[in-house]
Image (cartoon, rainbow, N blue to C red; front, side, top):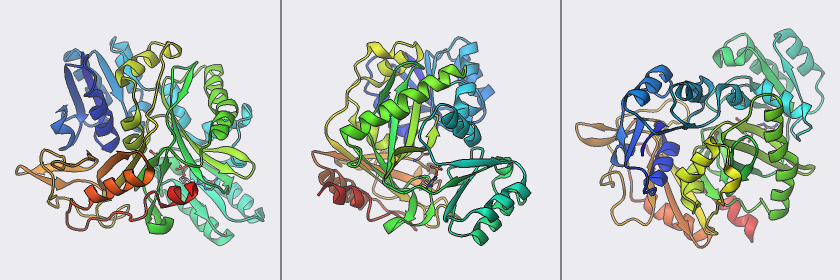
Length: 427
Ligand code: AMP
Ligand code: GLY
């Protein structure tokens, strides 16, 4: 089979490394991929958001299957376009991708179908939003831009003054572009966060092993929100009892709700959950694999990934037995200094041969790398993700950090405390 993976980050590299284990795949392509992905697949220089060109390329080159990983091409309808050309693809249709692409949609869906989430109001008028904030008595409050904003459209405001400034910036100042024209204002929830990615074909939902992201840039969960600085799996807070409750109160009701709305969801549905004192609640849905969650979840998947993906596309997920290893995985992200704000690119990376650490017991997933005159250089905010597995979380973390320590580039920033909270939760 000829398979194309759309995207070019650490998540896509993890998907590609897993698909490489599939004997059925004879040719593996990535669009656009990156320097590290280029060691595992043939990179096609088309941007992931250039959906017409990708669909045309896939048809011309007779792809048998396409995996669409990032949110933008999903929201733009790439899966629909591929299907029109007779190419089966993994990922939701445009109609279903709205579950991530519009926070107002997802909040209304949860309200209508009684799926637990933070209480909220949606605003399209800045004066009404300000009046609402002026009347709020409990702080902090959370402001969310309606549309896709690279994970940066969420602001936690500690007090009224902060919130009034932020709402002005979002709704009038165009801080998040058109994404900020509609804003959701919601109550602030507390509790451990859990990411649960799931496979669903629109009927059956199969949760993957749980994970924990570390969204803030600095140790101790300080600094700005990022796309994610590291992950561990499984998440120790996610007990079998909580998993059962999430299945009954959140996962199945969500899949049923999407079907009832005429938007059946096929692909990877990501549940961002908070385990509040009142039970698990949805913080956000994503219509795709998480990044860097995928880098710890897929290494633990025992079932052939392409088999599961095809079952999702064909609506026969219930026939497949999906299993995960009982081991642990940890991913440490190596970022460019200054990320998620301004950072420099083009810094030479040392320590890697053919994209990997020679003899290393860990896998290096490339997020933002490029080749410059044949040398590997940094090309993004998140540069690499180093994933290791182990019989214990501690063993996985030690191995990931040991390997990460052997890689360097100017300005390299990594958190030193990935997994620390998960380790203390265990004891
Ligand atoms: P999101 O982009 O929706 O995942 O939000 C980014 C981060 O903001 C989440 O991972 C949470 O840590 C935090 N967050 C979002 N919504 C809430 C909320 N209602 N209460 C507390 N924290 C939140
Ligand atoms: N790591 C969170 C996300 O992929 O949105």
